[in-house]
Length: 216
Image (cartoon, helix red, strand yellow):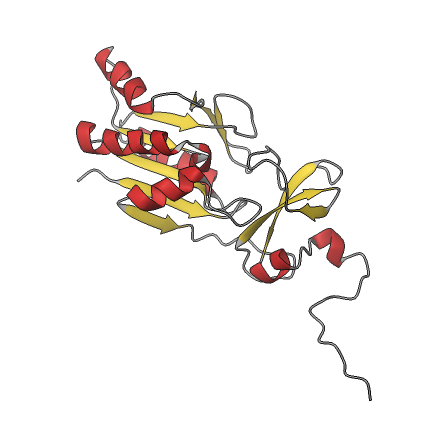
């Protein structure tokens, strides 16, 4: 049976790489898919991985009806065997509903890839709706690591290396961007709560992880 599957994880855990691998595997078997993405680091209409792999994609712009787009492609005679959706956290809730309709009405598998929460540890609307509707939710097995060596579970937004917790939910940046610009860093929950990025930890400030010593 066709499924809507949500592959989720933090930034830097290989979501786009897995999406590209699935495209490759299906292409090798003669299957053809529609690839959607939104706000990829490589630019509009691209699906890219930090490993350097990139392919063309359809930009899932705000207000775009994804179901109608797929039906239009099929009506024109294009073969569509499956859908890949990268950066799915940026989709509107109604666009996720449209993906579910693709599965139910067109009998196509839809594989969505995205991060679950934003820099404030709040659910993205697209991710929330995918959690509500997906037939299956798969946590990525490649674990990103916090600077302390623990498993990274949260995405932090940084400006000049300092973590910020206010601002628009969607601001495009990268974990490998220059420190002076808006960037992102993956942290464990402990250091996300304490707003301790790698830059802050290496500044020589006494770590809040050290227990206070009671006066003698």
